[in-house]
Length: 371
Ligand SMILES: *[C@@H]1O[C@H](CO)[C@@H](O)[C@H](O)[C@H]1NC(C)=O
Ligand SMILES: *[C@@H]1O[C@H](CO)[C@@H](O)[C@H](O)[C@H]1NC(C)=O
Ligand SMILES: *[C@@H]1O[C@H](CO)[C@@H](O)[C@H](O)[C@H]1NC(C)=O
Ligand SMILES: *[C@@H]1O[C@H](CO)[C@@H](O)[C@H](O)[C@H]1NC(C)=O
Image 1 (cartoon, rainbow, N blue to C red):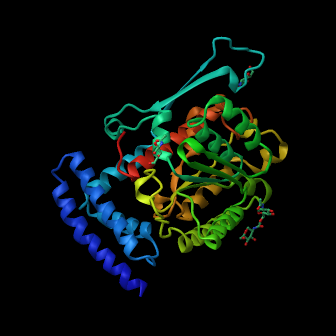
Image 2 (cartoon, protein in one colour):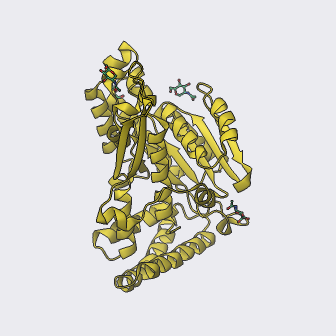
Image 3 (cartoon, rainbow, N blue to C red):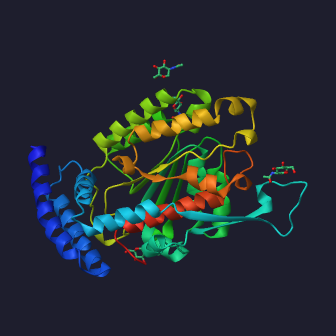
């Protein structure tokens, strides 16, 4: 039965997509955006009418991958091109004016990041969102960040964009209680953020299973794992197997029919869609700076290379046909460099801040918005 429904919707979509793509080919960007808006509304109505339809975004993904391969659809190509350029970020790292040569830790350096200037990157018009824009975008959203300490810093960087400094200080204290969960509601914009301490991939799988049980899903789900596994289990193929389990639990449970309750489509621009999934990749490890002999031994370059390959071959990531959009802390931390870390593993907030802006721009692209 589901097969029939899926086929029907796929057919409807082809009917919609193909003429749009052809018409859109010579249309201005705004018109193309308008068409994609129309498509989205159609999809939303489709979801209302077929409450048991298993997977909106599977369906969107399958359409986008089939249409981008023969480049029938301009919108999708354009979006994919920009998504692939999101990590084109350059860093400027220089000593602070009051540089202390006796204590040359990362605090001694100022860091600035910006998107690389090039015609293709410029044409995507990425932007560092201001507080007001972030609040607009995340208005009414439920964000869940699950993982290890990297995820914790990422959550803090996100909150930095929406909270005032006083509130941020209290958040910082409670968020960094070791190995604990954290929940906050930002009343002004009805935004919820949950941080779930889940250092291993199996913990992430459990988080997903809990959603299944409770039948509630966040709008934005950011996950990441690997460092704990590398240090305590040190077995890349086992890590790969755990990723496959996470992936299959996700694809069977998510993407789900989003909860279009009462005022769904009118509020926050992000909240009306099925969950947006982001994978927070492991940072670049600077072996000589790791702070215990055990870490130096187990978390070596060879091992982190193997872990990275497992992530790729698990096909978790969008670029390999999987559910997660990559937030590549590995490349951001690598390009920021050793002056951006003190322990060779946790990087300065600014690295994760860049990751947050990448995520926000990805959300803008996905929801076809310009500010
Ligand atoms: C959030 O959305 C609500 C409902 O649409 C709106 O009334 C409110 O002004 C928005 N707040 C911000 C900060 O954008
Ligand atoms: C995470 O998983 C590990 C190993 O499976 C388990 O020992 C640990 O209790 C879990 N932690 C949490 C916070 O669920
Ligand atoms: C690594 O993990 C795999 C899969 O779980 C297992 O088959 C293998 O024996 C493990 N290797 C070592 C050296 O423990
Ligand atoms: C700090 O200083 C030491 C010795 O001068 C040097 O070897 C090291 O590379 C410096 N570290 C950073 C992060 O600049």
